[in-house]
Length: 305
Ligand code: SF4
Ligand code: SF4
Figure (cartoon, rainbow, N blue to C red):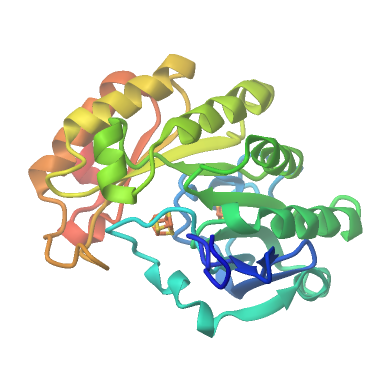
């Protein structure tokens, strides 16, 4: 960055010959809200909040945690620039509030109905030091035995050492890490997101190798892919599913039906045939495949059986 310029994610800038960050370990640019369970979290189809798995250690009920809340923590800024971004308001940094770690920790300590934190946005990578610090604070300050799961919904391209610390918090608390595997073939990934996917795939494997085996009954890792019409077809989904299966065929994989947004607001909703072919392709390699946003097609779960 030249003097006066702002970096790609929008969080850092060069001023007077130094790099300045709008985010520290104690303060970050985000907004937050309570999201009643069962939420539309991409991993709610298998997580403790959606299913009660891991009860009583990781869930407050043996079934869906109705009556409880996720604290949704929406970061501004992202290290990718996806043409289809469905949360593109993360780019409007001028609207971001500066929130302290103390504020969200105190909110959680004072509301026993909060059972998880979901870091998303934007994506958590540019502000990971803040997320790691406040997640550690809440786990240390909560009453012993209270359920507060730490989850991440991200592009997965973070610094590997920080990614490992983040996944470790999920592992310890009953939470999970959701990687958006946007495409497998690099040219398509670059075309859609502006970045290659080397580090994303390596980080996915890192989280799998460090944590998955030790908590198979409450999966600590899942993947999602947005079915962008004409770009992310069954060839891409097949390659992603084979990559996941090369680690473990039980890792949950969620296919998301696309709706037009941001620069791709001239595309249709994912065509039914594409959804069906991608689902069938993923099922050839993986045991736990889900499809979300079925309402966009007027489908229900029974359409997939
Ligand atoms: S934040 Fe985690 S535990 Fe909570 S609903 Fe989402 S995936 Fe489930
Ligand atoms: S990684 Fe997610 S938040 Fe970031 S630009 Fe892509 S879709 Fe948007």
